[in-house]
Image (cartoon, rainbow, N blue to C red; front, side):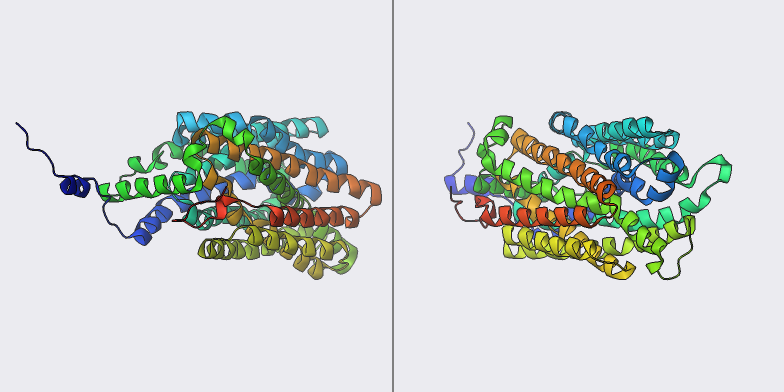
Length: 458
């Protein structure tokens, strides 16, 4: 007959082992963030490289400002249509296989951009690029919830999100050199740009199958004690934030906060992609009007501007990490987001009336800092109150609506440029929408900011 276990002994055997939390999170950060950071850089380069190629691309293909803006934006309609089903499939199939599939597919489409011959092929391939990449960004946000509880999430997301600003730095430097290959092997400079950034994505996509781990339990670099402790921490966080009770897809659709955050994210994406798609063109216009610092004309001016355009992204990368760290330190989200929106509005107002290159560059830097830096605290909000398929659906809903904002920003700016023959009106409209975003954040009352260890209010 087996001996019975005393209650105090049973409690001891079931007790979660004590570990050094800082070391565990540092270990997870070291093993995950650099790799997914690199993956997102590839994604972002393929998404926005058309902005760096703008001058020669429009000239060689005889595209109007409206068509170019539409082509920059139509990518996001593809994402809008397929973000939700893609993210739900990621939750069922697993991040490793699904992310690899996404990367291989979009690498192929990104490389085919070298075959663009005119407006129709440009619009079709940009739409297909959005379809093929759908689910990558919301999948990465969802993936981070498998590893970091909400009180660590703003920092983790901020470190991941700096990839978007670092991609701007890398994209500018790479474009500076690739655009100078114009005419080599019978290819335009922009064709070298698309080809050189599409093929690496295709090849790296296969590495995901071996490098990415679906869940902490699959990570050989975590000890058994660390895995047990992390599982307990994540479960505790889900219970405190209410995510354990809202883990069905219908919960995401029923939660008003998801739709408010979707509107906020759409306003953010309007500004982000206005910067991405139009900033090089805005600065290049000032250079060509003789306000630059002696830049060469033609391709030389474009490559100079591509290099100069990296500076706002450097500043945004630094500030994104700082804002994410401070948001987790204070466990405050809404005012961090609202403050970032306010800074972006100020930046766009300055850019609208700048008549010289360097004041315009400074203004666009302020706009970039604001739009990029709010990402950490923003994504910590919905991922605290939703779990399982609810989290997958909620994140996808937010990114889907955000895709509409990303579509509207570049196309609206291009249309208004055609009508007014300058960027002033378009930049002022986008800046005004940033103020609306700040107001929505201030009005948002949510238990997602409840500190760990306390009971969330309704």
